[in-house]
Length: 216
Picture 1: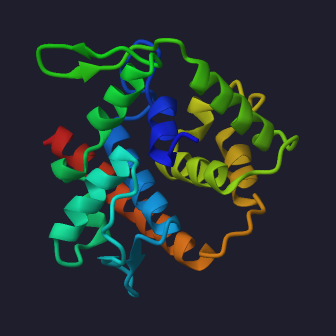
Picture 2: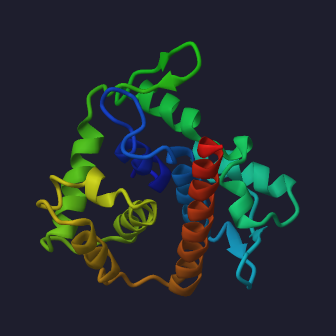
Picture 3: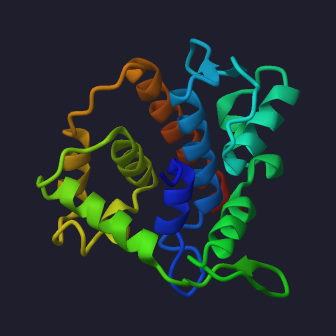
């Protein structure tokens, strides 16, 4: 199965290869990686309003994007989770993009300053969107992975734009309420909720900082 950050990459990459609906794709991918590492019990969060990340098991997972970030975390000393969103060493965009390019899902297109990832076969994304659409419209029970993806899109405030067609035209408020009401039984539910809340706060701070910098 495609990883959580892999599926987030597909959702946040337009078929033309540009970032879809948000300038925070990199931060969203880091959030997805940290969430999956938490669910795999490779990392844990300390208590407090600004939790730190502690590595429980540094052994490779076999998933390139997860192992890239896990190796970086292992070399650090309990970094604050929010500080990881902007770190270049945690940017898994190219790692995921190259893997999808090798599988024919996207094509790598190197520009003067940026690399973009135009759509290839799009089969995985079509299946993913159909799955999330069924969850939002109540015809399929959400898996843990579905819930995490929808929570991160909600945190970025782009769920309604990304999944407009799949949600049946829900407003952002309707979609947010639907995501909040998802019934997912998770052994690590409390830790996951703290992770999502902390990531929401960190991404909001990142968005605010970028906006202020752009206006200066």
